[in-house]
Amino acid sequence: MATAATEATSYLTDVNSAWLNKLRDKMLIPMAQTGYNHPVMEQIRTGTFPREKLIKLLSDLCWVITGFPEYVAALAARAPKNDHQAKAALLENAFIERDHPFMLAHAINKLGGDGDSIVNGPDWEYDYSDFILRLRMVLEAYCYHRPWIEGMAAAAVGIETVTPQIFGGMGKAVVANYGLEEADAEWFTIHGGEVEMEHGNDGLRMLDAYIDENDTETQAACIAAIKLVCTGIAIDLFEAYQ
Image 1 (cartoon, rainbow, N blue to C red):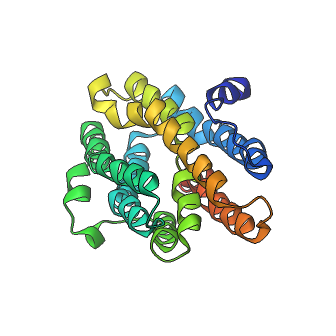
Image 2: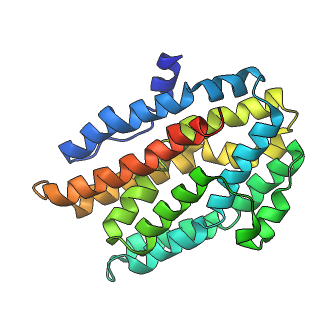
Image 3: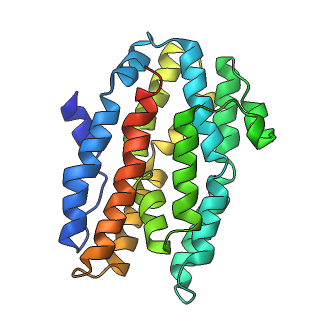
C-alpha cells in the first residue's frame, strides 16, 4: 500500500531550491502516505467506516472549505502588487473554489447528511468539532494575518500538495462502498485530479521564487506553517473520528 501511495504522490514537482525538494521528500510525500494509509482511510476503502462518522467528517471538512474562496482571494489581494501573474492565478483559483463547498455539500446530502445547512449558514450555528474549529482558526490566521508568503505556504503547499492523494482515494471509496454515483463525487474527483495537483506544485514554485536560498528564517516559518496545516489535513482530521 505504501508503494501505491508513493507512486500517487509522484505528481509533486522538482524545484530549484534544495530546501523545498527536501521538504517534499521528507515531509509532504510521507505525510500524504500517512494520510492515505490511516486506519480511518482503510476503513473507508473497505466500507467498514460507519456512514454517520463519514458524514460528520465530511461535514466538518465542508464547514472549513466554505471559507476557501475568501482565503484564496485574501492571498491574491495581499500578493506583491506588481506580481500580476501570481495575483491572476490566485484570483482564478478563488473563483474556482467558489463552487467547491457546494460540490462537497451535495455529496454529503447524497450520503444522508445536511450539506445544504453548512453552505447556507448561519455559519456559527453549525455543530463543529473542536479539532475542525482549531484548523479553521489556523488557516484564517495564516491567510489573513501572518506574512503573505507564510499564508501561501500554509494554504497552497500545506493543503494542496497532500489533498490529491488522500481525497482522490476517498472519492473512489465513497462511490464503491457508500452508494454515491460518480456524478455525486465530483468534489473528490476534482481534488484527486490534475488541477489540484498543479495547485500544489504552483505553491512550491511560488515559495521557490520568493524565498531566498539563504533566508533560513523565512524558510523555517514556512516549514512550520506547512507542517501544522499538513498534519491537520493528513493525520489529525482522521484521528478526530476514530
